[in-house]
Image (cartoon, rainbow, N blue to C red; front, side, top):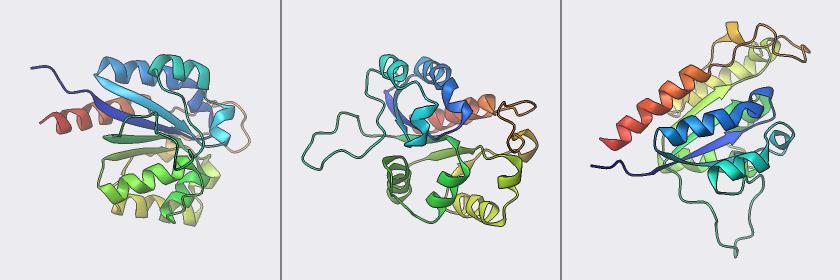
Amino acid sequence: MAQRKLVLYVIACGGCPAAELPALVEHAQGEGWTVCVVTTPSGTKFADAERLSELTGYPARNDYKRPEDPDVLPLPDVFAVVPATFNTTSKWAQKISDTLALGLPNEALGLGLPVVAVPWPNVALARHPSFISSVTLLRELGVTVILDPERLPAPNSGAPGAASFPWDELRKELHDMRLSLDN
């Protein structure tokens, strides 16, 4: 029996890992996902919207549509917020929906859809008390959070250096979510 095409929304924030999203999209498609990409306004500086649109067959959106306009994206089954910046993680935990990239995961929580987030602040911001509280709250709300403070970039480093984005852990989590939804 063929697996149903589940829809994965990748929400990309303004961080260096967003430049590597084409590889994640290709991997997810190989696992049977239909993938749509939405970016924060700052995410547009890092994610290659044209390339992501070519890969997915859908526009990489970064803003709300007008209510009377048809939605060009299929309805989502799962969300991956990757990379999730300090700003997005903090605003999301406070239920702020001032961008499409925040509104969609907030709606996902309200609909009970599976969400995985990979926060990617620098080490100093990851130690900020409000960030720690935000991550805790998102987990309490049911978000699967992949976060290893030992792998985060240093402040003002410019380049990732010793930082190591957890792509393998994210791919495994998406694989497990896919299996769960197929059963």
